[in-house]
Length: 396
Length: 178
Image (cartoon, rainbow over the protein chains, first blue to last red):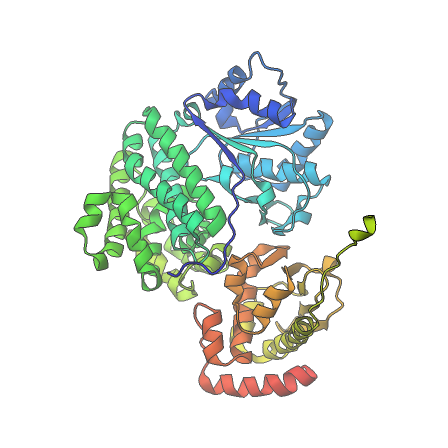
């Protein structure tokens, strides 16, 4: 692939990474001149006691939590965003802290749009690159290492009235800081660790071969792949591995940064569609489709797929493969990783194991070819190719 | 003293502006004409809701086109004055140079998106379908040597149809919207 004739790259997020990184939050809020944040999270975070970590981090500070909302549902919606916005205003909060996974972070991005743009209707802001003005100080504490939402410029919010998912894309949605604290992902069970790790790997790999790739996104993608290749098996086998947990949290943020600036491709198109039709968790479908999506792109991206062998499998494997074999070897290394994660955590390897039904293929294929991710995929995702991917992933 | 620092107003690029506006008109009429008969375009518009209005404009005031999806799946060209804030989907080309490159066969829709030359308001799930429709229209309007550089794959249009429809689009389609 040629050096891009033109590209844009934006990443204004401060990364605060460490085993007790959250303890820096009061200083960060002070620096932004705010002291009354609203905390948005979900029942799962509260249940496993992660809020305690936040409350301890704020001890002896001048920060008052203006409001705590801990009922964010697994899928963000217009109703929830409006409800939280009302509370934010009534309690006169001055900043936002999201503690959770993709849904919590997307919800908080939606709330930030409404409070910053002084509006009550999130639907007005649907679209790409149309937001203007300044936004509330916003901080993200991820509790999974996969979505990369803390580093992405997009939010997906369900419009319950119309029954559709709205996409909102703008670099103004990025938080002021992402706090990667080991304690926040330590309680993730092995299967979820494996699934979210494969989600992050897919972000990095698809960003690396996207038609929007650029040297900046490449560097984040390659380092993300390196960390996942080195630590995902270890952490899935030993969830209490603090060092590995922190490495994976960093990998997820790096992969998020890469795809926020280079987009993803057909694996995500297939994954979004399969998730919508068959209600399979996102990380699971990413794991299922990743090698097949890479194979689909071989005709146009074999060189770059081959380049990912070095970060994924290490120097010895890379050096042992002939240059023309490296793309296939990358794909077989992804398949080997899938097998290992299946043995370690039971993460489904194919659509059949994930509970998808063959009669759902028509709906999935039709949805997939209209998914926005398909635009930046090197090879055109036609209906026939979508069916091909489904067939390949059925038992493969 | 302050008179040494006058306001510097943006320059004009009348040639590019005129070309852009002319192509917007051609594109609008071509969309209307081709959507009546081309099966690839009709396959796409079949999934659009009836009455969907789509505006493409060049920011800030570089011209625009609007089309509306009709009950028979065709698109009706609504001219250049359709209010942008009333459109269901608005595709904005962010500057005159990007628009000129897109409209003169130097920049494809997906690369324009990758370069942030385009922003959009409304339901982004239509974006991919709209890009496919634009690709088909460009395949008719531009010779294959140009259109093949503008998209990942040129649409599967049989040669005889390509030539016949191109002739019709450049005559009856653009002149009379038929």
